[in-house]
Length: 79
Figure 1: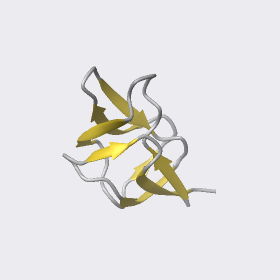
Figure 2: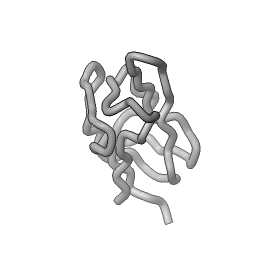
Figure 3: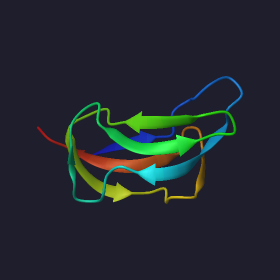
C-alpha cells in the first residue's frame, strides 16, 4: 500500500486546497497519471501518481485544505 501525500509546492506554501479529484476509489491508475488538482493562494497544481495501482482510499475531500506532507490518497500497488 502506498500513501500519496501533499507535496512540497514551493518555499512559502504550507498547505493547499483539494479542488478536484481526477480519480475515484476502485479505479486503476498508471504512474504519472493526474490524481488530484490542488490550489494554493498562488497557483494550481496537479498531483500525479507515483506508481501503478488501484485507488483504495481517497483521504482528503474536495474543498478540504491539507498541509504539506499529509496523506491525500492510498494506492494498492500492482506487482
